[in-house]
Length: 161
Image 1 (cartoon, rainbow, N blue to C red):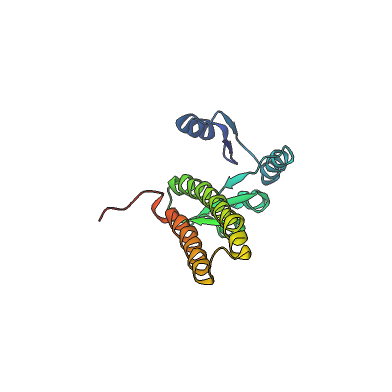
Image 2 (cartoon, helix red, strand yellow; image 1 turned 90 degrees about the horizontal axis):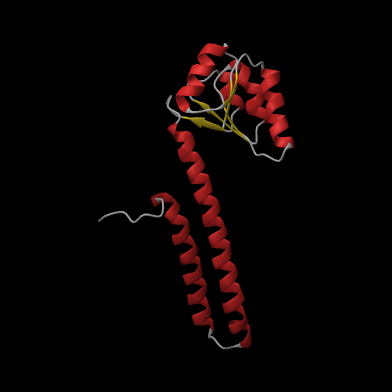
């Protein structure tokens, strides 16, 4: 995590210390921010940029993924990929967790579908299963993939009741 700010050094240092960010820069211009993001991406990093000011727009537009609060300057909201409702930053962590969980579930679903195709289709082609059983197996496979995807809504936890 890095903090790049156009603000003066004392408030930037204070905020960085309060939230535990060791790598920070104050008095950054829009070009400085965009250059830092370009350097990180050239090093193979996929950058998430969060910004709310007029001078954040070029970096937001150039980031791999960008977020801006709903209260941000119009140009920042327009440049961002995701708009965060409210003024708190907690939705950023939620979005990252959700993206990681989504990625995991997508790979699980591809694996389930591939396993079904590897096992069931040869049995069907060889004539070991009737068309009715093949249709039931296909439906069961689709239901399993759908139920697995629905775990994203609950965070993998069962809801009471």
